[in-house]
Each structure stands twice: as C-alpha cells, then as structure tokens.
Length: 136
Image 1 (cartoon, rainbow, N blue to C red):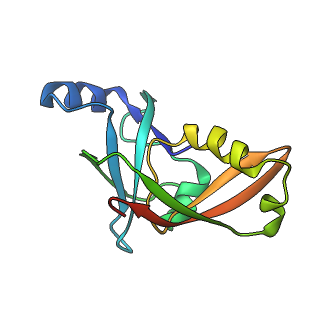
Image 2: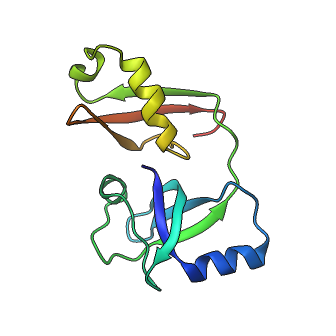
C-alpha cells in the first residue's frame, strides 16, 4: 500500500493547520533527492518515527532509520496512468485488469517513476508507473 504510519503529534499538527482532505504527503529522501507521494493509514507510530512499506523504502533508497522529509500536499485527481509489469507473467494471469483495479484501490496516489508491488495468489508482481495524467 502507498500509505504510512505517523505519530499522533503529526495528527495534532495537521488538525491545527486546517489541512484539506484526503491527507496526502510528499515523502522525500534528502540524501539522494528522490521523492514519492503517499497517504496515511493511522497515527500510531512512536514519536519521531514514520513507518513505510518496504517497497516504498526501496523506491526512495531508504534504509531503516534514514531521515525523511514529509510534507502535506494537495494533488489533482488522476485521470490516466500507464503501467508496465516487470514480468509478462502478470499479463498472463486470468484477468489482470480486474486484479489491477482491485489492488490499485490500496494506493492513495501514484507517481511516475515509482514501482509498486501487486501481491496476488501468493506471488509479488512489480509494476512500474510509466506515465500519469494530468500530472506526473
């Protein structure tokens, strides 16, 4: 999933700032200049920590304990996306379109250049986000 777990202090600060919903964030690795976007699952992390999915850490070249920058953002609703599976095995599944439609509901946003993980039938399928419209 494209979601993170933040500490409760983040929720208090966001509520004070009167942000717009849904809560979306730009998450970046300042060491290498990589960024991505995500939503939040819950506010139950220990103070000073942010829990990310392993595949998102890989996309951002992060290791456990790495420093990140997290900013609240407003994003336009996506209208179009081009995806490219890493293996043809995904395309050869019985109904890849239905699998994608179901699995993509787990993602609050997609970003061009990201690689997402679709877990189906006890197997992981990596899929690149090649293009997004109206914005990357």
